[in-house]
Length: 221
Ligand code: G3P
Image 1: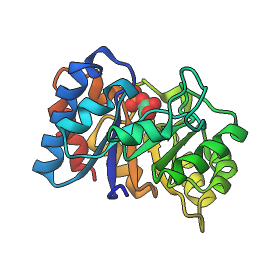
Image 2: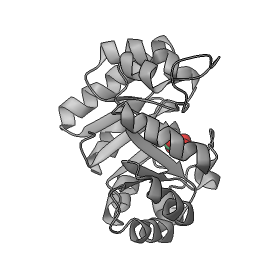
Image 3: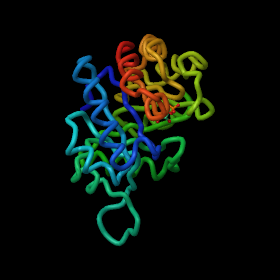
Image 4: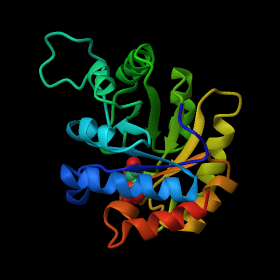
């Protein structure tokens, strides 16, 4: 399981966070996690999972998996494979990699069979209420229009976080929030509003000094 409260950095496919840079950045994340004694995880491109998992002790997540079992599925990203090379879980339905809910349900079931932790991304509290019935471990609410921007979800849309917390009341899925998160205050406010963690990308992957940014984010947990 992922220790909460948590900061999850989605490396996406940023130049600064793929290949050798993925290992370098993951080591920075691990250094800050150890120094601040805070829970930090990284979500990396599937081709980087093996190298990053070998290089760091913090949790490594895939950014997507398909629902397929091993077999004639050209190009599929299998739960079995990402697990075999070190992933402990996966993002699903990210705004940049949407999955139709019917397939999403099948994918979550398959991930569970492989004992992979599931973090399902949704655009708002309404979608959170729809996907909670699939019982993912976490639901990450990320308003698409805020992704990659400088105003965080906790400043721009606190009501969406509150409504998402309400929507998940009584469900096993824990709330994570993301989009535009890049300061201590953004993290603090997200937790105060009811999230158990934040999911972010550009605040760290595009930073001149990612270690400094991550130190500041960790202060918010
Ligand atoms: O998965 C997290 C990501 O979509 C948020 O992006 O750049 O706004 O932190 P960013």
